[in-house]
Image 1 (cartoon, rainbow, N blue to C red):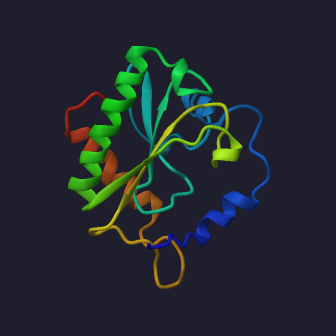
Image 2 (tube, rainbow, N blue to C red):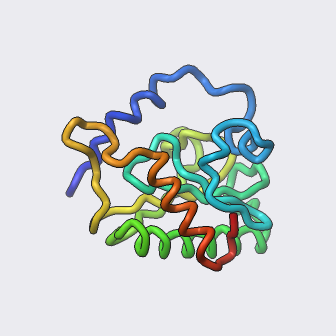
Length: 162
């Protein structure tokens, strides 16, 4: 099995605790790395992961601050799933992903970095997706990947629009 070597995530692991409150709720309020938001729907938004496992690591996040998937309304859940499917197509078409790993980590024991606000990770793998550069750093700058994907979301129809 191929292992992901992600030394750039050490910045996240060793960083001080985040500001008071939820990082996703702050993004919705216009505070934080809002340039990483790729699109917004009626119930959720799509955002680049600031500390990605691979190039193109994206999250779909419901607007409401909920700890569990079972708390989402049918409309919220439907939009999250449809947005994830749309995002998967974008990752395959624009970044050349061979496959996409979907993941939801509920709580710290499950590996959640952001607890209390459910979100769906999409981690592209294979094809033209580089895992790491020769120097151990992320091989494509996050800003460049964000630009490519934001352009893709802006030019395609789907449940999310910028």
